[in-house]
Length: 132
Image (cartoon, rainbow, N blue to C red; front, top):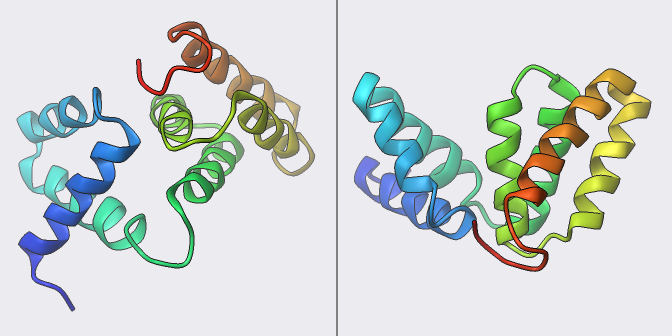
């Protein structure tokens, strides 16, 4: 087991790759209300899980886009991870295909809502850019 500060630093490094512009604001926004929770999110979700070997960040982000689409209840988090997927090399087409695939398993409403989130992210950035 790694030291908590090492986990947090590793999590911040992953978050920086996923969303260099918005990641710091995300953590600061959470920390303003729940600093301990912000630390847990960074250390566990990004340091322990996303920082694991075995899958690259692109694959992890596409899996996360699929899961959040299927949940259908987390549009803000889906937006963060669609942007993150683009930032680590996923294409718009891959993201659309992953969300479309979720229509089979989570239903058309979940996929339609996921596509609406993806459209907002795509419209907010020039085609081909890596960050917003």
